[in-house]
Length: 406
Image (tube, rainbow, N blue to C red):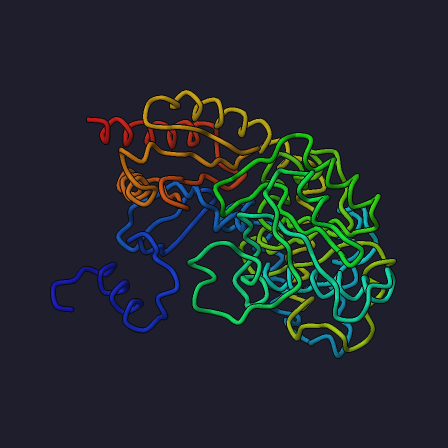
């Protein structure tokens, strides 16, 4: 590694010793503050990914850091074998935020999804009366709910799925946004419908305005649980506490994660009412780290930040500004812009570049974004981003497109 600079050495060491499950951009972040990160060479970048919405409140938010530091000096882990003084206040606050009364605390988003699946099946057998082993769950084409074995069993993404079978049965996939197809897939043994209110990994795909209300009506009428995966769309990202709020619907279960940990610790949860979550008995589900005191303390402060409505309002106001600026690029190398709040999927003309190539050019200009599915890129800056920084990011995208167009 003679002659390599610090970044090159670190990247080479990482590539030599880590399984190649990700293909990151060639930037090595060393420090971060608010909406900005700084690499090992001192160059600053505007973070327009926010760790896939896990850093909604910005890097190093002082209230979140203070909560974590204070808890580090007290106790960080007890396991659920004992009570701890942070867990009760955390689950009470989260249940109140969601308008529900019970929580299953977990760690990662995929764990929340897996927990929701187990819970829906248990409810189906013990409450609805579905015959043992016959429960099915309806999902949507283009979904992304994680990468565990059960979850990829109902994915249609070949990269996530191929070569990892045999797959878990019990899922039926229908076109996203098609309420009639969803209703047709439901039978007497259907226990739940599991969908993303906005599909994130698919490219920030927003369904028709009538879709979520129709899903709520259908599931209520047919005695099927409506499970909303708000792991990426929730907690302020789309201009509301939950994207379901924007659609005027309340699901039976919320699946939460990412931003719930404030970008400091992994925290996830299933949130619902006792008539559903109460079907689980002692020892039937759990997690050693789920609901640990450190995570609970940070998540309590996240909930406190959301309780003021300030971040939801910032996302609405700045999101309108962002989408107006991005839509002005349609016809100038952009084919379509989708999203809500501070979340945008941008389809780049594939004759110009792939999404990866656009993100690499943006990186050179000091903007970090992430591609998905060919020529689509995603923007999801922290909710603390300034209006001026947002404008600057779009200016950099416009400059990249102009450069590609020659």
